[in-house]
Image (cartoon, rainbow, N blue to C red; front, top):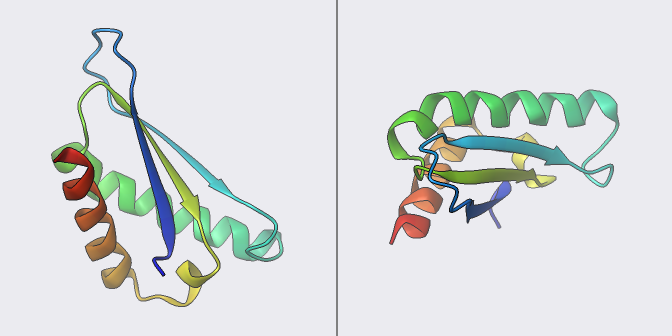
Amino acid sequence: MPGFVLLVRDRADGSATKRVGYTVSKKVGNSVVRNRMKRRLRALAREILPQAGIVGADHVLIGRPSGIERPFAQLREEFGRALAKVAR
């Protein structure tokens, strides 16, 4: 199971802006753990979305409990694969 869920929705408003949102529920852990997970998701988005994101779409990253223990390199690889799958 991946460390996050990626949802992508085309806005169909003619704008080329790539927007991103993050959510991590209380099931993941206490506030310290949730904030750490959000920081990891933000770092992923900053690194990968400019090149691989879908133009004119909203990207939502939903953090999962397994994302905290995962190495960042593995999360990066999963995010790249998820975006490639959505782009097809």
